[in-house]
Length: 243
Ligand SMILES: [Fe+2]
Ligand SMILES: [Fe+2]
Image (tube, rainbow, N blue to C red; front, side, top):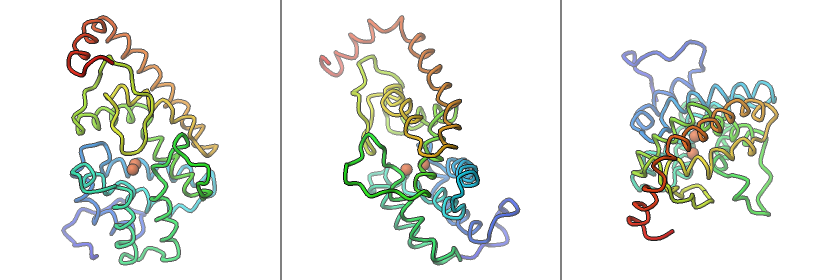
C-alpha cells in the first residue's frame, strides 16, 4: 500500500513497513469495541519490545504480530469466523506487500496462530512453541492484567451483552471462544490465572504488580456486591433456573 500525504504521520523512528501496516489496519482496529482495538495493539507492542529486549527475541516479528493478532476480533464479534484464522490470513496477505522481511513472515504467522493457547487447554502432544511465540503470549496476557486489563474485561462483557456480575458461581473453566457468565466470572475463570501462565522471566516479573491489582479489585468487587447477594441469587435463579 502507499501512505497518502494527507494521512496522519506515525511517530518518528518506525520502519516504513510498520507505518504502512499501522495505517492499513487502522480501519479494522478502530471500529473494535471489545477492548481489542488499535490501542491494545500499541500497548502490546510496547510490552513485547520490553520482553524482546531482555529475552533477546526478534522485535520485528513481535511488532508485526502485535498489530495483526487481533485484527479479526471485530469480524469474529459479528459472527464472521475465528479471529486467529482471520489474523493469519491478513498477515499472509499484507506483510509481503509492505516490505516486511519475507524470511520472518512464517514466524509472525506462527505467533498469531498460537497467541490464544493457554496451558490449561493444552493437549499433551502440542508442538513446542518458539521463544517469539512465548514472548508474544506474555505481552498479550499482560495487557489483560492490571487496570487496563480490568477495563478491557468489562468493555468486552458489554460488547458481548453479558452482565458485569451474576451471583451464581462461575462455571469454572474458560477457553478461547467461550463466554463467561459475567465479566466478574471472567476475571475469576481467566484473568486471575494469567500470572501463572507467563512464559518468560520478564513476563513473570511484569505480571506481579498487575496481578496484585486484579486480586485487590476482586476483593473490593465482592465486598461491594455482598449486601445484594441473597436477593440477587433469587433473581438469578428465577431468570436462569436453579444452579
Ligand atoms: Fe486474540
Ligand atoms: Fe490481544
